[in-house]
Image 1 (cartoon, rainbow, N blue to C red):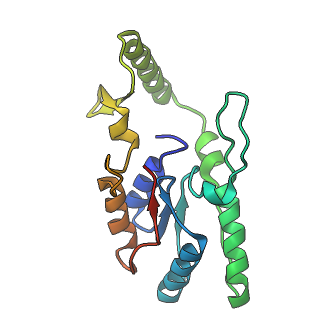
Image 2 (cartoon, rainbow, N blue to C red):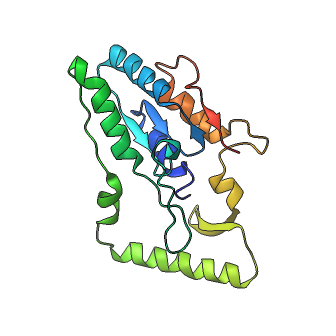
Length: 189
């Protein structure tokens, strides 16, 4: 999970069951294909819901900059997509409604249960590292704190670059009504 993984966006889109397009960093798409998909969906349904992971579409909005820690400063794909879609839809009278959930997600005060859970995860993550484990994620599975190899958590592609089960599930769930073939997706390995 993180800026370079569409884990949260893909699972949220799958759970919501109303998303018509989910853009994730693991799958590169051409904007012409996205616009064509938008046109097909709007013609069929009259509206469309798009979910976008933070790291998606960086080939279109890359800043080329690094922050003080050496991490890539990402361009804002949400604003880029909103502006591109508004420009594309304006001649036909269409428009977009853009919601940036980062403020909603990060602005809710924690409650005591959140604090206890986070302390528990933090303690177990530190103990895991002190035991010498690396490349693992610590999280709750059936209310038991567990370690999972990170490659199982974040890598949604098969090791040989083929589409992974999670992406396939997301494609089937989110595009089944109007799936007309691939969006010329290029999978990142």
